[in-house]
Length: 309
Image (cartoon, rainbow, N blue to C red):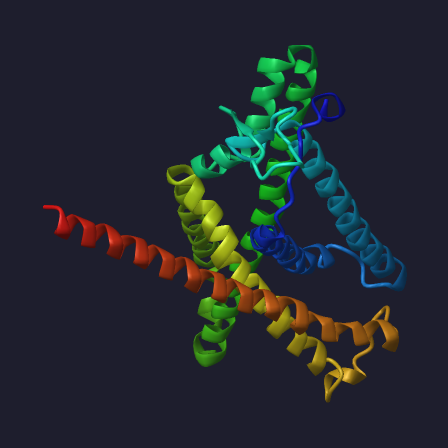
């Protein structure tokens, strides 16, 4: 479909920040998913090796699919609502008359979808269904693929979040048991209360996320772009890096692991703070710029309202 439509693509690398931050969210999500998946395999050399290969293969596959997906969307959906097209014969090299353009307006574009808080699938399927109806089956397959992709993503990341919350509850329960050792027999009998606590904490967390996503989809994307990227980048760039450094110090370096990492590969862990902490700094800088622009816009509106009562 993209080869037939062949929408003109314009590049603007000044807008690379948002895709960069969303990419770091995906990488940070992998960091959080790995402990849950690792707990399900046997601790032997063969399974750990294939676990690493599966993670690398999954990341590579996702990167390739994302590149082809972006290329397909940009070839079909206009990027902006308006586009200037140079009129034929309007270029005159012998005079100083500027070239003439005509403006083309698009009622469906990625710009409008972003302002409405929609994902790129919606304008893509609209254009295919309205203008290229013979490719309607492509639109249906795209919607099915996106539905499956979002469902799998929600289940995987949701399971990871549930696993993390249950770990916090278990840690809290263990500390309570250690601080009140004389009541330990009674605490061990309260497994039902512990299970109810896990369920309530998970239900509360998922309710908040579901409410934000349903009530304000655009705000939910902003939360993913700013808050989630900041937290995940800080986790991967600082805390995971410190964990890797500590594993080479006493007393952890003497622990026997099924499959050790070669020193050459392990040296790559220095890239973690460089990449992810740069993303943290960029996220903070962009957030401050947006806040300043919002404050300036609000100040101008209030000033105009005061000047023109």
